[in-house]
Amino acid sequence: MKENYYPLFKRLIEAYAEGDFKETVDQMLKEEFEDDQQGREVLAALCGIDINTLNPDAFTYEIADAITKNQVYTKIVQKVHHCGEDCECIEGQSKCQSVCPFSAIMKDPDSGDKWIDPELCMNCGRCVTVCDKGNYMDLKQFLPLYELLKTGEKVIAIVAPAIAGQFGEQVSLDQLREAFIKIGFTDMMEVAVAADVLSLKEALEFSEHVKTKDDLLITSCCCPIWVAMLRKVYQDLVKYVSPSVSPMVAMGRIIKKLNPDAKVVFIGPCIAKKSEAKEPDIADAVDYVLTFQEVEVIFDAFKIDVHTLEGVPTIDYASRGGRLYAHTGGVSQAVYEIVEEIFPKKKELFKAIQIDGAANCKQFLNKFEQSNNDITFVEGMGCIGGCVGGPKAIVNKEIGKEAVDKVAYESAIKIPVHSEVLVRLFEQLDIHSVEDLKAKSSLFERSFE
Image (cartoon, rainbow, N blue to C red; front, top):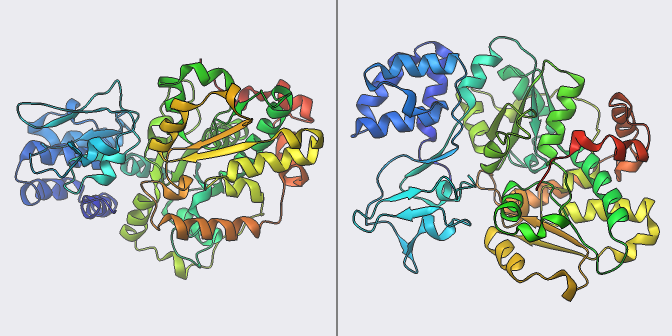
């Protein structure tokens, strides 16, 4: 479901680009909202700014000043106005409460209004997508980013593997690269190449840690909701979790290692990635996060028709496995193919299970006991279907999966260990062997303790 506030988001982008931002904000406050406070909260969220720091009497000036100074708010998901008693309920809970995997939405018994408990909220954004009334919003980061793009600094867009098919069945990665460059980005790169690195890393970890059918490796790749569940609720399983960062973070770190002055912007279908990018131990990697739906609005605001572009080509550097990370089962397949290739004696021990959807993940983890089954590799995704089912995808997950598979199986590189591109990348990172990757893995790791 497209967000109720996207027309306002588009109008703000156009006004900022055309130089009549303050006048447009004043006009929107008068015409679009019955409640001034709600209007300021909505517009602040669309501009990526913290309303709590703004003086209501000087709102227009201060919000423009905050954008210029890149004062991006750190709270990603927020409630922007009162919930009435007319909210649709499911088994005694409002829709937003029923979809929250962390039970973070509380209800005032007297007023019937709801509020988000910041200690419980993991910023998955399910409340944003399910609320028909627009009571919840996720912070939009484009206007502070656009201020940076106008300066001509090196800014790299990194796109999630799930981008295949999102902007049209026939739209290529080369056309999308040209579209991002037209907005002001220096280049666009696939996160799938970092997924290849992590597939290799987790294959090495599988070989090292799984000696018998009673051993276990839980992947930490891709999904911040899956990781949040493990860290917040199922701490007893953390000892089995690979210490890998997500492909988004790995890609950001690779780019900044090779280009220290670069800024990195992740483009994907996920709201929770906005929160992940701000986690203190990995905040060095990605500077901004945009969703596919936001990018669709941005292209429209700048009158960019991706279908008509010739495209800016680059080398095909991501493997089939890295691109398959976009849907459920992709991580397992990618890691298994490497295990099969370089650790053939271990392939019989690779017994994988995939769980998708936050509720299904919780149900599985509640019942999981490693000693009572033969599972040795666990892949979890917070969204049904994996990333292609993300809350800010443009097309439905079936179409997304089909498009991802098409792009993945057309990859020139089938398995990362056969990639000359990956070998050259490792050399640039001063990694010259499998032993080197183990010894210098801190670039791709974090602590879950």
